[in-house]
Each structure stands twice: as structure tokens, then as C-alpha cells.
Image (cartoon, rainbow, N blue to C red):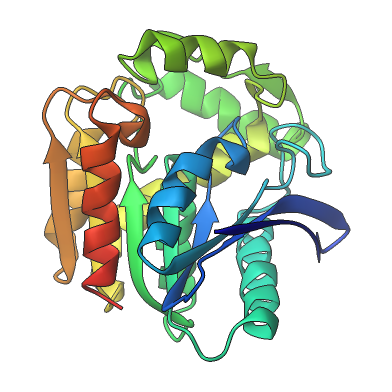
Amino acid sequence: MIKNDILLNSGQENLAGWYWQAENPQAIVILIHGFGEHVSRYEHVAEKFTAKNISVLGVDLIGHGNSTGKRGHVDSIKDFYDAIDAMVNYAKQETNDLPFVLYGHSMGGNIVLNYQLNNPQSDFCCILSSSPWLKLKMQPSAVQLFLAKTMNSIYPSLQQSGDLDIKQISSVEAVQKDYENDPLNHDKISVRLFNEIYNNGLFAIENASGIKIPVLIAHGDDDGITSADASKEFADNCPPATLKLWPGLRHETHNEYNQDEVIDFYVEWVNGNI
């Protein structure tokens, strides 16, 4: 595996990330991380893919990690779609007609599904969405939603704490501690970003039948952050979708006690759909 740092332009922002190249690549994964984290946390995932001749390219999204932008804020979910387009364009310059795979986790899982719904003629041959933020496990109240909608029109960049319970990320204590001590992680979410992800999560569930390429929806059934039931609802509405529920796993299935089994399953599924 060859690891190269990259810096891409997307709109007015600079997106920092990594390109993990397989020695003899047969496909390339475009990786979209979750809310509050950054793509370097997926290096062990990239190592698994590259060992099976699949390259991985990912950047820190706007307002995350080493990329520019106000922490936890975007003007529109389309800003994330632009980041995907920037990665695809970069990869096309580096590869020769390889199939593209779109892989997103949590917020990224929402983004990749909505990207395909809005770009049905995209370059991607399949989608992997793990623990997608389609709905939260603890849904906001009607009052909270009203306030979020109101503030979205008055002060969209207003930031609040995401109130993340670190213990819900993974049952592995070392993962919890690493997340808490990682200076590139943050828990700030703007009113606009919340509204964009919340509304588009509902949109994805309602319009799931619009995706015509293979989709793997994976979720731990002990996820206390995003809703596994919402993932099932999406999969039920999307004929080409495969639903994989992991018994006893929390939010980051790729960072659980059986992470090798989980990641190997993802790699095998991708290999079978390229």
C-alpha cells in the first residue's frame, strides 16, 4: 500500500485527506466519514481494502479535521456532494477506468445515499452505507425541531454541542479513549447542518426506491446514536439494498471488538459488486 496526502479544492474550501493506493488496484473507494471525526480514523479500514486490490481515497469534510471551514457547518448538503465530485475527479486523473465505490459512515452514510439519489447517473457501481444517520436513535422532540427550523432561517451557522456519548461509539474502551483524546475530533454542529442531515435522512427513506445500484446498509443493533430501525426502513424501500445487522455492535461497527470480521465482510461485499 502506498499512502499519499492530498489537498483538494471544493468551492472556497480546501479539503485535506489521504489516498491509500493498492499495488494492483481493481477499484477505488471514495470514503465519506461521519460527523465530528476525520478520515485518518479509517486507515485500518483502508489497509483491509488495499490488501484486496481496492484503493481508498478520502478527505476531511468541510468543517472537519484538517480541512477548512467553520467546525460542523455547511451552507447546504450539496457542499458535501461537491467534495465527492472533487474526489472522483482527482481519482480519474490517477486511475485508468477503474470502477468507483461510494462508502460512507454515519453522517457520511446519509450523504452517500442522498448523493446517489440526486445523481442517479453517477460514476459509482455500488454503495456501502454503515450506521447511516437517517434518523437518530433518540429523535428530537417537536419543540426541538421547531426551534431548529426557526433558527435555521435566522442564524443558520449557530453552533451547539452534539452531546455525543463517547461510550456509544464502540464497546471497546481504547476506541472511546482515542476518540475523546483526538484533537481533530469535535462535537460542534450548526443549526443548518443539523437541518440538512435531518431532512435529507427522511428524504432518503421516502425515496429509497430511486437508487438502482447495489447498496449495503450495515448497522449494529446496539447503536445508541443512529437508528438501526431507520436503516431497515430504508432497505425495505430500496429493492437492490442488502441489510446487514450486527448483533450487539454499537455505532462504529468497524471499530468494535470483532472489527476484522466486520471490515472483511465489507471488503468481500464490495469485491462482489464491482
